[in-house]
Image (cartoon, rainbow, N blue to C red; front, side):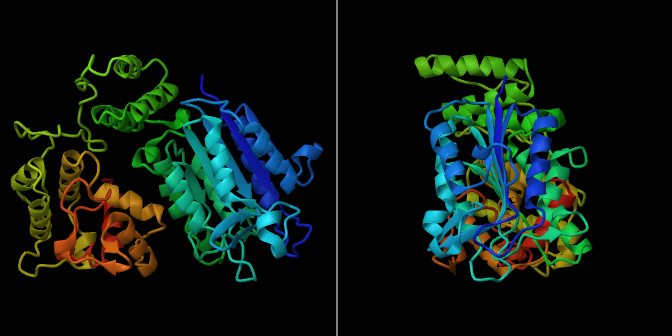
Length: 488
């Protein structure tokens, strides 16, 4: 039975800051109630300014004491979950992010506030393989203290912690009078609850990036787009709430676990198979895999893993990887097309690892499917009308033969994790280019300088320069919006 523990902090009133919040305390109370009553968490440490327990008042010494004492030694294990939720003020100094306790003050940020870097480091010591950091703390509103975000995202990325921030860098997290809540926490609880039923990190992220801007728009507030960091990509498939998990969620998680095992990443494979068991108790594939991994770790040459027919079943959501060396090309991704386009050549190029020629063929086939072969480029309208069946075929081929490194769906997850939406945003597009390796030192690479091999960054291919959606940047939001519409 998995352990589920959490720390929840909500602060309205600050001793040394004349900018009280209205609903941060209530947001934390609602999160505590959800975790205890609906998510089945056994322990929730709730820090509140009106707590009857003096040790749970949200002062710096109380929070630091908990972080120091509780996380001195591991007390959880693989399959367990630890969440950290904070609603209040955040501050930034010299490139470092801090959460402000009730007795913190801006005149001495480093010594009176709590470093997010320290929080992440301590959380990582608990032993759980699923750590989620949720921050509703960017509430500067143009005052004297710079808001948090960038450093937290980078630290979470490096440490393998899932982080969910209430807004993207340079945005503000708003409270809504009509809701008597922050719009982010309102959407978060909707997404985790019966309204959204978001069982996985990926589905929760998709819900948040649509719902939070919608709430703000309805209530007359400026744009606010949550930012989720979940790396490596397998973490986006982790199941947060097993009661809402679907068969597709299970198959995706099994795919990730099988892939890790094939690639001899046994520690990750074991963690993921345990995750399958937590969400689906008694699953025989997971039980057999964990036993197999235990033998492999003791006797590395004893077992050579081959996916079972069940694990090898192909689905549109989670195509299986091809082996690293090809003796034959098996057309197990259906080459479907609404426009009669033949994708055989693209499949063969990908199967034999000819990545640049496959990228060029992708451009040609996209133009053909859109009826724009003569024009050699796609308009936004062409992308919006691009046939879903063809989009799925192209994506599945790239995902399959790159072992999950490349493809539209992979790029879409990265783009959305940065706060990207259909609307073109130069800053987000440049950040996306940095992440997938299309830009180096703030300069866009020439096509000839891109990496056409599997050592390239995740999401590096396909480039789509000839179609204008990717490398050129202006159509990237439209393409990923189409990917979402087509459920690629």
